[in-house]
Length: 208
Image 1: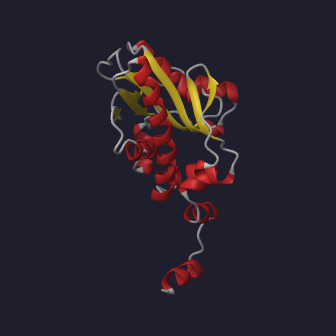
Image 2 (image 1 turned 90 degrees about the vertical axis):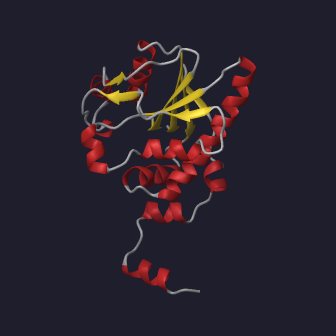
Image 3 (image 1 turned 90 degrees about the horizontal axis):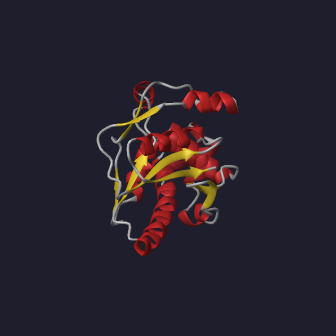
């Protein structure tokens, strides 16, 4: 057994969240997965209060942790597969997964959109689902939602998104966010999709 990993951990102790993710598995995270309708046409897959869920979300978001993104992608993929099965009965032809976009400022600061990365990992080998990271954009840079109260969050996200191009009313659009708190972000994004002509829109958060 190589002593290098032990030496590196001694010299550079891993973050608590990083260590939790590194020692976890798809089965461990999956044991917490319960698709739950939070409000009309909005679903959450995992409870954010669970330490492993919180660790995966934070590591994927702030540290571009690939394993955290892969674990979350597996949970998302399982949900998408179940949605497709239901859609076959309803005759749905195509699902378009729309990650909540970052503002230009936030993207420059972070260098990646963690929700988009999770989405692209999830749809690998799943038919009838596409990822579109360009159909939705931010109209302006918004304050971090975690820094605001409930009413301020709603105001902060009001008219924060716009749709670029044309949407197809025969498609089902799934607007994906990583964490839902008050739901202001998802509601604003879903409203923008509806205003652009999308008739079937689902709000989906990885955690709530």
